Image (cartoon, rainbow, N blue to C red; front, top):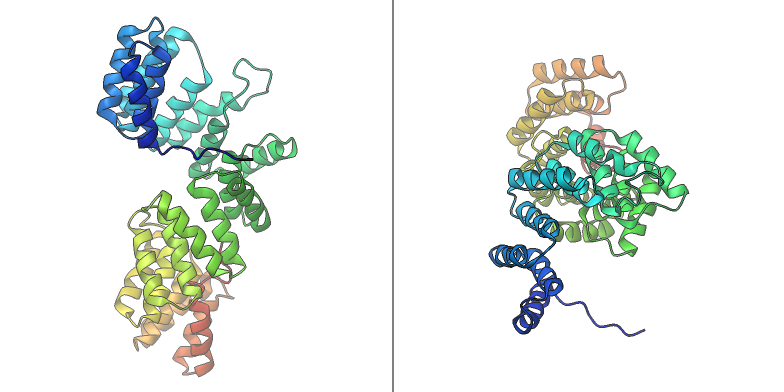
Length: 370
């Protein structure tokens, strides 16, 4: 079947503007043009079109909703919330209003509030807010992920999957939740389903890459993570995963750079800090390794592996007393701590320990990578 390629956002806006010149009072055309201007980030023009629509329309609520959408795009979040709240008060609940109010809370970092606002949209299909938009399902899962309610979100996803009612966008988010629950096969399956459906969001790319890393397929993982970065260049999780891929490939300088990029936006992520510590060890920068591991320990003092890794760095720096003290702390937390054992072997001068340490460091201090 032949199909006409979709126009880019600027091209679509230009085409609609041309049509609008010949029919300036066509409200439907005006609305399409306003929405195209928002999508193309032509915010000043979008504002002009929305004001024209408000003057022309007998349905101001629809234009106020577009005004709120413009405010969200401009990150004028308080203004957007006020407009949407007024619309809800005047016109009653509506899934699109609820979704956008929740999205405002998500952008403000109020993930629990976002999830609570969306909860009615997940209710039984026969309720007044039935037909909840697929985007609302995806946003609820994303908010639940951020709050750490992984099992509840996964259980809901499984029920929807079983009934064939989990849309592609929600599949993409659910795939990352599956990955974080160590459900690698589910993560691979759901992320691939989302990608095959054309979902262009970070989550399915990162989840599919995580499954690839678990299988040590770094080539596929790197390809997927680069696609994720094209969508969100500053995404810390994507950079962290790239760092782990580089560690597996023994590209330690590259790994260090990627992990440092990750920590620019998620500076308190303990696993990334530990991985950076190992990358710095392999780059023979013991000072940077110590700094990364000290921060990891300050954030999670109960991590035996972090204390063991710190013992390794002490041992490599010929700081025997500090190394032995760190080993004791690690074994007190976990009698089978692998990194503490490596430190002991280094202290004893065993070369086998050095070889094992090099192999272990390529995983960032983890036996498996998700």
